[in-house]
Amino acid sequence: MGARLDQHYLVDPRVRDAMVEGARLKPEDRVLEIGPGRGMLTEALLRRAREVVAVELDELLAANLSAALGRPPNLRVVRADFLRLKIESLEPGPWQVAANLPYAVATPILQRLLPWPHWSTAVLMFQKEVAERIAARPGCGDYGLLTLSVAIHAAAEVLLEAPRESFRPRPRVASAVVRLQRRTAPLVPAEEQAAFFRLARAAFSQRRKMALGVLSRSLGLPRELLSGVFADLEIEPSARAEEITLEGWRGLAQRLSMGS
Image (cartoon, rainbow, N blue to C red):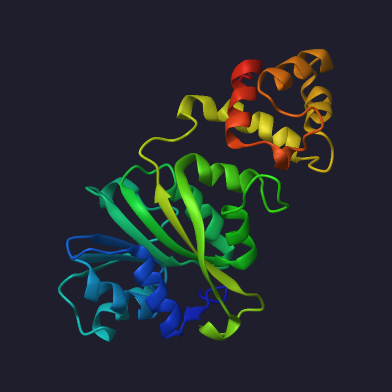
């Protein structure tokens, strides 16, 4: 299973300790760990939190984890695929989340986690290029739909890079740890998100071109209408998709009354 999902087990105490510190755990906290693997991170989390619930897909790893760690009383192992888990069964929260995510399913796991209201902080390991996209700022090449989908729900920052030597087996690429702090309310309400992403997706599909022209052609909207809306929102008419802030995209979606 590990190889199939590109799972690389963390073996670097420095990176593990940085992840635990980044989670800012308090003794009363409950931690949800997704994909504990052989338990290196789990062991450190158990020393800092009231309870750790470890969700592990691999049957053998799940069966052996508690015994390998000395059967700690504050560990609960759930043998399940997080992407199919009835996440409501983990309530009540709030949960702190920690995970060394398999590359192949890291983004789907993130997207499953983001709208769930019962977590507060997440410290997650990603492939470095994915981490950079998650935490990107407007105007840089990494800024895109993934950035926006995360920013709606959480503030993101890259904590540290994890070199290839931090894992067994060694991956072909570097990894990085991201800390997410969940917002009290999403910056784009759920009922507006379909319109928001329909608009942004159209522009980012041709990100090297000016967003105004792309939207006019892709969505069949008069250029004059779009020019006026861009001016009202103080968005430069020459702006490319990556140069428009989340607030700008929300304003465009609202003003253009895009349907889902």
